[in-house]
Length: 62
Image (cartoon, rainbow, N blue to C red; front, side, top):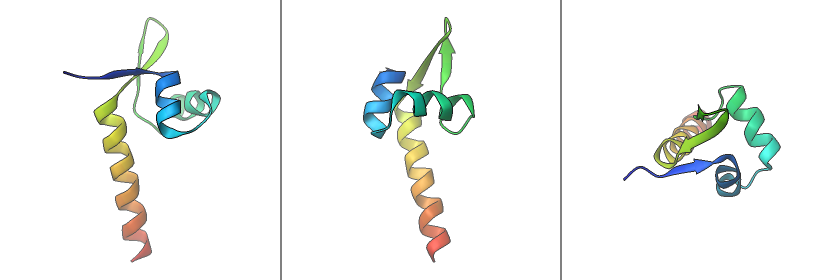
């Protein structure tokens, strides 16, 4: 089953302010999609995005 989050839920998960989450998704920096004008996020895509960012950071440090 796919878990879908609201902007509030993703901001809590990422430990950022909702305003920051809105800005990041609007800029295409985090994966999200709109449903009826409201942003939604697939949990597995957010987790994959985090993993990708961590991999990029590690490879830049080597």
